[in-house]
Amino acid sequence: MTRPPARGAPGRRHAPLLFFGPFAVVFLAFFIVPIGYAVWQSFTGVRRSGPLGLGGSETTFAGLSNYSDALTQTGFTESLLRILLFGLVTVPLMIFAAVVLALLLDSAAAVWPRFFRTVYFLPFGIPGVIASILWSYLYLPELSPILEVLQRVGVTAEPLAGDSVLWAIANIVLWEFAGYNMLIIVAQLQAAPRDLYDAARVDGANAWQLVWHLKLPLIRPAAVLATVFTIIGTVQLFAEPLVLERAAPAVTNDYTPNVSAYNQAFTYNDYGLAAAEAVLLALAAFVLSFGFLRLVGRAGRPGGGGR
Image (cartoon, rainbow, N blue to C red; front, top):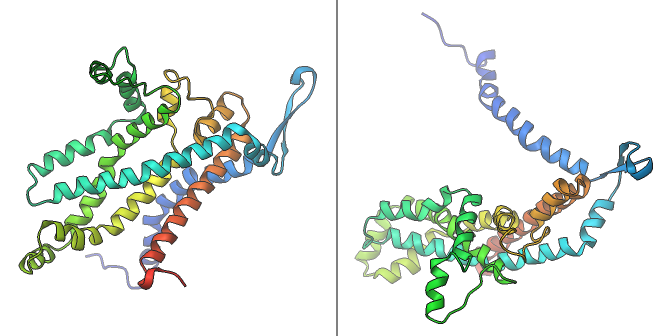
């Protein structure tokens, strides 16, 4: 009979490394190293020699010139402002829709909650590229049955024209991710002890009082988490405008920061500038997410959070 290793034996001491090691290697190889390489590349440039630059090229240290170029480009700065406006509208709508759907599914009067939970979550399972292609057909006046019905009642809409395309993209994003955020909030609601609801009903609380005084405070942590995910996803907006670019003339090569970085790298072959834009975008996502968490943390303290 094999005796188990004694406490402090080498096998037992190294056991955590056997579990953590594979994850650490993968995390380092596919997360830390690419980030480090992108940061390094954002400080480099390419110097070409010879007539028309055909004499060869070498990588040189460019300092902060790529960051300076990115911040002085009108297209990139406009894309940052555009995505900020997009987030100011989309993030509250997303969380509101997710909370409403979650409360409806958790209601005692809900019919077929599992079926509707799957229906609401289903759009998240559709890749963003395919979802954008599907919606692009619904946005074209000559193909869309929705626009045709609106036209018959005297309403003319052109979702892919001018500034309207930003809100057409917002509609796609809401359709894709509202169900995902709803699932986060539903999980928080279902994790709460049912005794709390029963005690509130015994005390005479009606349905609205249960929602306002019990359910909404309970889902606050889940709503905060969903909001952070939505902020990060909004800053990273990429697939939807890239797909709609062919159908919407208003979507340019620098419509969003991610689209701008993509085109700088793979259309103009300026990898240093693309890396600088990607780093700036990552910093923006960090600042917005951290700022929101600080704001929520202060609001949750007794007395409203002010010092």
